[in-house]
Amino acid sequence: MEKLAKDWITQGWLDFEYKKYVILAYLQQVQHNFKEQKLFPDLTEIAAHYQHTHELKQSKEAIQAAFPRQITGIDWQKMELMREATLPDEPHLAEIDQIVEYTLPRLKNTLTAGWQQYNDIESQVTFRPVGIVPLQLNDGYLFIYRASQRQAEVYKYQIRLFNNQAERYVHTFHVETIQKNASTTFENLKINLVKKHRDLPNPATYLVESARQYPVAETLLPIAKKMVAKEVALG
Image 1 (cartoon, rainbow, N blue to C red):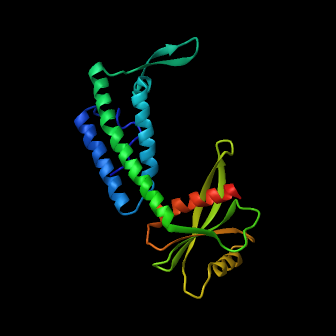
Image 2 (image 1 turned 90 degrees about the vertical axis):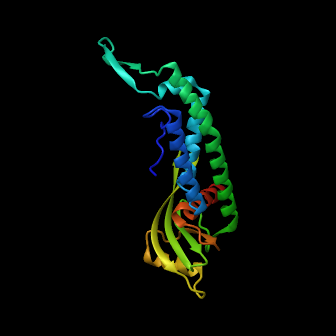
Image 3 (image 1 turned 120 degrees about the vertical axis):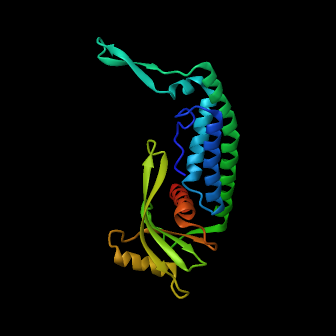
């Protein structure tokens, strides 16, 4: 199923039974992904949908703003277009209320279950620095190791700042996949990386290790990025 549009409630055919089918089909797909231990990007999207739907419930103005505005003329003094909201009639507003009331608890339940699953998985993985931790932590490497496969995914990471430098975001890109044997340590793997990639002569390097075979892109990598962001903030 395609992603659910932000304005899916007011978009298109405004009918409770139809919208009920839309949200149930979407949540069914999300729950299927959760069963396969694939948490992202669904978890982030569900949180956004819950917040937006809650805002619709809290403010009728938000409902009105969700509808398109038609051009009704031109204000020649201000040299700008004049627009008028194409508001639905009262029965349609009642229909939206019904959709919102049906949707909110289902989004909340799915969101709660998803974050509980996230916390459970996070508690089962280990996180530690590899080798000596340098003073500069904003650039480095990240190992994601699934012990059952003896396979490590290697990522280069960069810390980026948002919201007036109040929020850290970890940007990553994949470097390589390494088959690890019992005689090879992660410290040795780090040394080999430094030899091959001279742009980071003394990189901060972190290991996220999982005994279970969780999906990397949809679960372990997002968890690892949050762990790195927290570690850098504390450092």
